[in-house]
Image (tube, rainbow, N blue to C red; front, side, top):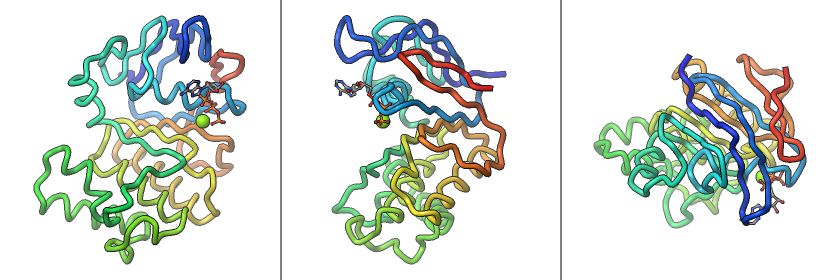
Length: 223
Ligand SMILES: Nc1ncnc2c1ncn2[C@@H]1O[C@H](COP(=O)(O)OP(=O)(O)OP(=O)(O)O)[C@@H](O)[C@H]1O
Ligand SMILES: [Mg+2]
């Protein structure tokens, strides 16, 4: 099976002689659904950052989507990021733009026509139950609604890989359910590889998944 992520003796840190993740070797299959757990400060966000090139390997090697992340060039990174969807806990929506335009952003970057982008955005906003809010601005939406917009944006350009950092961290039951359904749907219907950092793995998952747990800089796969 194809691997979307391959790490070999991967070490990550923000400073020299510091070690957040130490000599980790693991891989993530294309089309799989993966949860990453671990205590606060254990390195979950740091690991996820390495997958989209926001932090470079201190040592060892990391390959994402066939692209080597060690000393990656800006142009290669930009290319790779066009195939990745990212969701953070704090949404990172553009406040001055409407919901519609926020979701359209990755499509504009990927060079889709206005017509195709418009149809895709309508479809996604209705998936996240926000079709009626398309013309509003992010500050006019609740936290749960904003996170659903962020999820729609992350999926807009049909990425091969979705990276989500505590996407349901502060959300109510309803918004959390919409987010999990969307991630499961992308995984089963579009074969998108999904990697989610979370403190709580939902009890009722409808797709098979793998579970990596980070402890003391080491990544354990939990069977
Ligand atoms: N930008 C940064 N510069 C320096 N150190 C950092 C930076 N970001 C995180 N760290 C440190 O790296 C370690 C791991 O942080 P990380 O954010 O990966 O943890 P986490 O597992 O995501 O925790 P949480 O569950 O609280 O989000 C922590 O000790 C943190 O202080
Ligand atoms: Mg974190």
